[in-house]
Image (cartoon, rainbow, N blue to C red):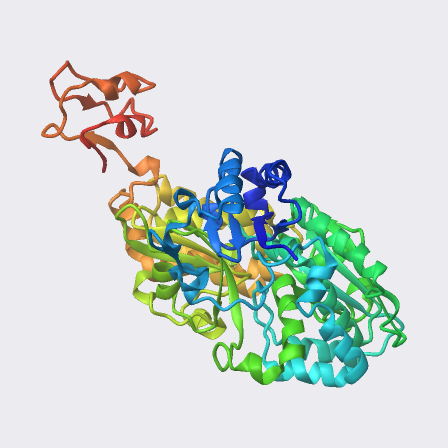
Length: 596
């Protein structure tokens, strides 16, 4: 029994900031002070507060150290672990009550309104040790279904829970399973979509890095429910830590007899293999993903037939994403009524969001469905920094839409977001402040979908490119009002005629920005002006003669010599020479330069 447990984040974000070096330094310092038998160092998954990494938490005190550097380790070991004195300068300030007390993480604004189900073990256990997963009821749900429940009872329980797929569209999970179970075949498959492709999204990656066994256990439960003996996890190769921990988890589960033949002595066989994706966004679409697993080019297939009838290798297949799988074991252990008691009537449970953009606390949050956008942004996220105001939030990535400030009090769930032209998506949430140009935002996402289109169907291959061309025309100052009308018409054509969800949802960022920020489009077209000063072709840098002190700093830093003026005399920018790099504005100490 250790007197102290030191948990260090081993997720991708903290690892990139030297958390592995911190762990090794910790072990070294602990050994130097003869504390090996008293202090246990645990490499965990993500704690959620990614902006404050690397993160270290020392129990039983619950001291939450943030932005820890390797050079801080000797002080932590000597002061805290040896002498029992918390190193206050490294504490996450929200946990500090006064000089003599700290509060638990659950009392801080970031965590107080969260409800962790999918993320319950992330930042709690060592994901590379199966015994730690078993110690928190791991594989108990699998044992329960194999020894106490029939396959139909499992499906009925998942159906009754109301769990909807967390990968985007929100299709009822139990219903999907029932379709596959009803189709007879000599082989069936269970697939996990870990090909998280939305820009700024890292929910699934964090679950796999912090709790890989929950996905394996849940897939085995699904295999039993539909009569499948083989599972595949399709994961992008850009997730090396997740891939490593998944493979280690699979090996450990085999060693313990929790995967493979005759699991729990019940005669049930189930195995799981990894398949690495090359980062194609279109492979997030279920049929394209299955085509890729088969070793072919990742392109979507026409539906019907749906995967529940003819999926992977033309056999009945179910596919759910990582977060969906992470809910299954808790539904089995706690019951459908427990799960339904969380969230909203039509969207039970919780949702994990990767909170990023212009927000104080970027990171990973899990909140009950029905939590308002205001609560997520202002309370959990800490609000928009640097004195700026909230303008919009983009949910669902390139497939989603923008939620304007007027909808800040919307209760987040599948139906409410769909009603305002947005979508849940896999859970990326990008916050934008008043410096964002919404036309430029739409162009950014269109650039992404144009690059990621597989090219199989003409509406998507050609239509997204035409949309992008119109947006480029508008942001360069050459757009017309007819372009806006034509663009809107093209959006609806794409939605109705594209083969798969990539093309069908590609217009969403355009349509939502047109709906809520049409005035910005009109300003770009009629006034040849970008209100946010983002679009370079429509922006000029101007020096205010009342504020300019003639210090010459702007002129000395202009790379093209576009600024003229004498010492102590207001300077002038030649707009014809100016390349709009912003160097002058950045260097000016008197706020005399502005974008107009």
